[in-house]
Image (cartoon, helix red, strand yellow):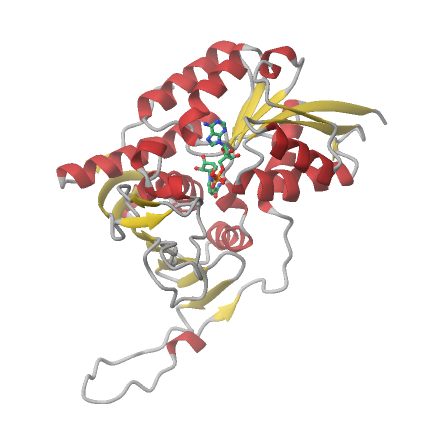
Length: 384
Ligand SMILES: NC(=O)c1ccc[n+]([C@@H]2O[C@H](COP(=O)([O-])OP(=O)(O)OC[C@H]3O[C@@H](n4cnc5c(N)ncnc54)[C@H](O)[C@@H]3O)[C@@H](O)[C@H]2O)c1
């Protein structure tokens, strides 16, 4: 058994996603386990190199987490040999950094979205093709226990013919105006100029969730809003929030399946989880959250009769059965990292590439255009 070291240049690691999900929940546990095990018993041991603009913050994280290498010198992208470049930094910088890394011959793995426009995304995919490097994009929702269970139900044919899916996502993100209730998401999310937009953020996720679990997306109709016009940033400064912070969309999927999506940072939660996915089919329905999933088969379906003159006597929420309630799953970000690393050594069919990321940007852009032009738009196949 051999141990092979894999340098991974990690950019954006002082941020929310980079630090929590990628460094603490993925990279460090993988290292602790002795690396990613290949089928021949060899182990691939990641060697993180933290990269960012603030050396002091990086030094602190490196110290805390026992990491040897960190730098604010971006030429590390060119000077490291046979590395992976990972980006969880700001979306605005992503296309340029990915281009730079790919041209230096590094494989790349990154957060979504891969660009702020389809043109940018297509360009990045072209560079990937020309340089021949391997690419991977985070599609974390596919690895949520709730959605893994939902996918299993689809594969088992539980639903019969799927009729529709309803995605209800969101929670109240505090504006930060009240010092007792600081905003729980970064301020850039609410500023257009810094890449903020819930449509761009979430449609990238919903594209791969729908394509990979239910059916390919064919058309979209979307309305966005900026419900909260002023917010307070991390430094206590009030700013004008000009990015959309909620949207309401209808999509048509292959075979006429309807998808209804509501995504909002201006709603209070009255459902099982911060996001719920309800799939209705001729033979049964299921509702998945982040971790749980519950079902109601045709045989278990109640028979309500509309009568506004009498109080309702049926407790609808009690009429669902937990599905795989005891099943446990590893952190989804970590699972995806392991799959990506294995794919660099020829193991597994890694399908979550930049080209898939471009489809997310495509849907986000079409949703935005649909809102501005107040019309339905079709999703064309991309020529990547
Ligand atoms: N997969 C998911 O579910 C998910 C969730 C949230 C965010 N994201 C994506 O992850 C990325 C980061 O989001 P976040 O919520 O962690 O944001 P964040 O603001 O917490 O982190 C941003 C990171 O980028 C760095 N950065 C910002 N401006 C920079 C500049 N000019 N030069 C160098 N570095 C700079 C910051 O220092 C920080 O490390 C975004 O692309 C976002 O779309 C993905």
